[in-house]
Length: 340
Image 1: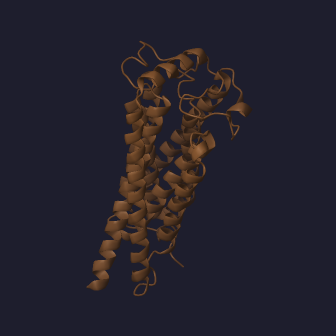
Image 2: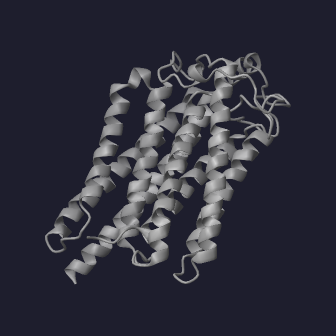
Image 3: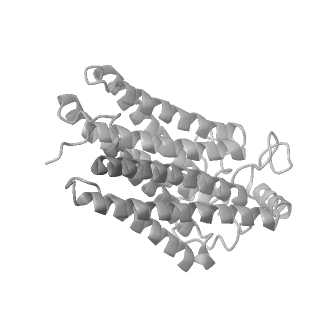
């Protein structure tokens, strides 16, 4: 009874940690997008104008408007909320790790390594935030925090999948064996796409292409790829710092679009393939889940451009990306290789 009770408590703690990590990803996206002015804070207008900024000069004027409109108190409550979520996650992870070690004495297969690694990653991100406080708005620092947050979410959801009993593994089937490498490929594509989206966001490239499916009226506009993907830019002294030049920002935006297209095509094909062959192993629901999350993220991504980047849609796109990652982790859990 004690063992069963502690195992159930470990599962509940892992689920709570995953939900807190998800809320952290979404709220951090909201705070970053609203304070950096990457999305329009008002709608249907944009920065007090009827249409979104179209040129680098328009974007600079929009940022000036946004800087004048904001109040210090607004940033304070966002920063306080971010820290409160981070502290809550740290405490839950610490308790989860300790509980895992206690269960390890009775159950050799009990998860300990992954909770410990996740707690260490959260601690590292906290230390990074403290040590780089003077560079906190540098694109590279923000990018590390975004990637770290998504990694924490994926690890915690993996722990939840290993503890729950609803999504059962079918690793022994021939269909599952054929799906493992394909699911991993989709996870790699999606992870790269998350990174491209994050890099585009922290470099203020969301407004570089105000039209869709073209960009600045062209299918392949002028771009400066090397400048766009320079890791350490002289940006980010504060949220009203200067932007990348328009060709560099365009390169980031177009890279994100191309990555989204590749992920959508491959992910859509894999989801449809699972729907076609997965009936025998009850895998159809997982293919449908991935297809829904993939479509949801893609639609919101297009809406960002069509509606001139309203803040709510931009945050929704970040949330959809996090949910897509969780659905892919769920799929891989179901088809994962059997334990040796």
